[in-house]
Length: 268
Length: 309
Image 1 (cartoon, rainbow over the protein chains, first blue to last red):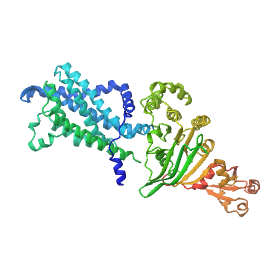
Image 2: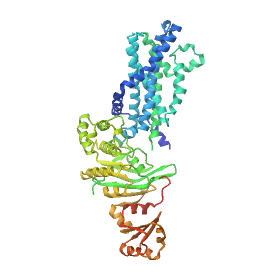
Image 3: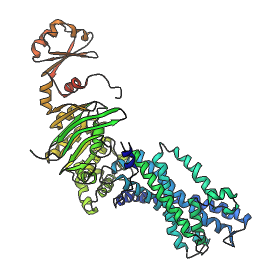
Image 4: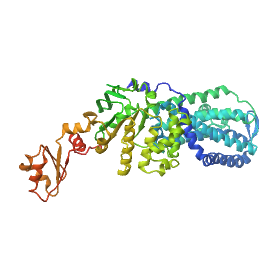
């Protein structure tokens, strides 16, 4: 038993064989890119319009980093992290689950010389790519609306890819545990939705009671927001190393757990 | 003697305290078609899964080709295998041709090589006119043939086919058999599991009969029949036929008698006298035929329906 446990928790064995699996997903997506794009950016834009312009008119300006910024900028710079989170999560939960269970795509792939570890890696990177794609489209719209013209947005872009990776790794844990689509509701209700409200996307985290802040400060979405928001205002983030480490630790730990649980699931 | 392509020794698999594969040994020679038959739950699919490294054996040894071991050399081995699983795993979003392209990439084949093979494979699968159709637009038989074509994309040395014709109509099944025969004539080697005794008899050089995870017989289909069965069978059915099984006059003429449902099976070395004797019951219908693999299968594994079937 312990030997099997050891195999399940063995370090990831990764190779470049993930690439044809990633390409497979890319080829499917190419066929559906336009409808998929509409779905991916419509919702974040509605948030932006409803809250940014609607609520923004009431709130006016928000204090950030010692200066007053328009609420729409405050919201846009936070909600783009939420968009990266959501895009990666949806892909790594619903779409990956369909590929595993409904279409049996993974079963087919594993009859070819591709290791399960590489398939999981491919799914993880694919979901992160989807997040990057969504984020790019939204950034384009934000630039068009003139919300920010900071040149540091070029740095925000790879950071948001990192955010996609973190949430894709986390979602794959729940993908490995799920028996059906309904299970994902727990993940959204118990983890993602609270995180969305606690990570300083809609209001500064100083508004939270101190004991809640204690937890909220270490959430991966908070780290993402703290890294990305200043870049929208053409400033460098404070404690960038700490926030980067939070994302890195969440990614690495989640990927390992997700891989172990997926191995357990596929072990006959 | 040539080196076998696949040699399985003392394979064991347990799920909890249930042993689903029990000390199973077999091998496949180059150019051979080995059939694995057995009732549902006999351990056929589990054996294939272990041979593919998808399930971990609890004991035994699986060696391929040039002394490569599963699971240690899984990737090396799979690069030379073609697999058709029981369930189709075709990509529903891709056309037939794209399915082949994408699958070939998993083997690390360059696109140019794959694209060269695609028309040949589609032709082989009698799908040349369906290259741009998606699996959803294909019939069951077409999907199975596309799965077979996909399994050939890497020009495998050995094919593992898990119930390749289950669920197909007779036309589609015959076309599949014909395609598999072509592969065998080309010198390919095949491991095949099946529920269809005519399929096993038609395609397989050798058979392995499994029941409860154990090998209960192995050999050439004709030899197995000769070894385990009387050469002829007279089936008698109709109202009250089962009572005939107790008729002393008939019992004396049969080597073995089986009753299943409303039918009596008289196994005999010489059917002539038995058929003459049956004239005394003109209302009964009779079917006289040589004994076949199905008789063998039912003799070895019993006629009762399995609980998990």
